[in-house]
Length: 490
Image (cartoon, rainbow, N blue to C red; front, side, top):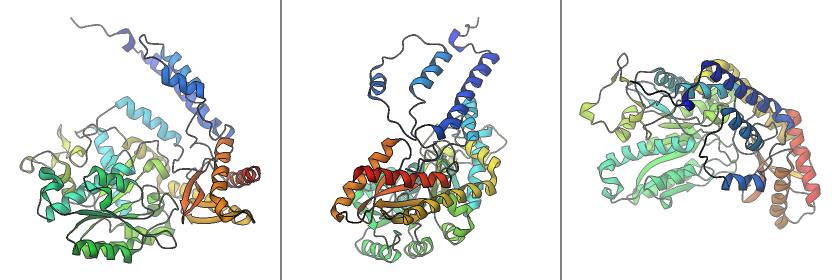
């Protein structure tokens, strides 16, 4: 005798359809209404207190009531990144198809650790497409890759493989003995503009942040290959074991692209793993003709990090790591003994070699579906147009800054524009504090949103355009809002 379904699990097809239609209406109204809403508004103290103190529900509420609470208490206070005048961090708006792809993936709800089900083959196809764009080998016995949560996890994954390869060459099994068996310092190398995930990965991998060598930048905020070579020479002479160099194809701070070809030469001469962080700028490098020389150099890397949830407009989260050496990646992560490994049976229940053998996660969400659907919908040509549009809007913003007597452009790269208020007659030692006040005024004003940063040792306002819904008028409005805030703060 079978047990009856609990009432809370009895969903008829018409009930699911009605709920879905209501959700779709909420999504459509939210996305369409963004340009007329404030760019950002903080959660009011009373609402924040209600979130912090509300007790755990004991009795359930109808799904419609829960949706109504979402509309009333959550939806009015978004992060802001969907608005055409949100130019702060590298957070793009989600493409509408990506939003619904998330729902479709959730409806299937697979674990994409492995097996012979469609989600596995979709992810393998997405990885292959990106490997082809990057000039990487794909498929056994070549390279591999997998979707991860973001650029930080992509970097951690790549550094784990690099650590395994370098320590094995030094004569220890880091998986069995850890770094304690080495008796020598392991070192990592990152540019001064490199992402902080390199330092976090060093801490998690037992390398230690004090063993991360920060290589100074040139006047264009790019890593200096000559100084990288000198740092490697010193460390090797001191008995250290260099694990990896992280170069950047589009720094989040200034949009700078490191000289990848020269850095690859240095890494090749020292036999050191080259990881390229393209989390932000990777799509532009892979798709736009103006970066074809950089793209050719990118193909020399051992690993690449990229975030489709940044400049490919996929909903969070969707990170990607490409790895040139599939065998090294499998050796670093797989818990299947080498003598029992197989190459998988694509036609059997087990399917191809499991993704869980190439990364940390065992349970893995169906991240690839939204990327797969967007790539098919927009195509390479569509993505080129969208990314080129974002860069053109950033150009318009930079031109407006240069035309304003009270503003000074500090850095310009990809779709990043860094600048500051510098009105004539204002003492130099007062400019940082003035710009901090201007930034706060703009952020809380609700008409534009920028981030703060440091460029060449001074506080700056930073814009990053990754929203195809932004236009020239929005760039002009950002300049106007900054100038208006400056007039209020002087």
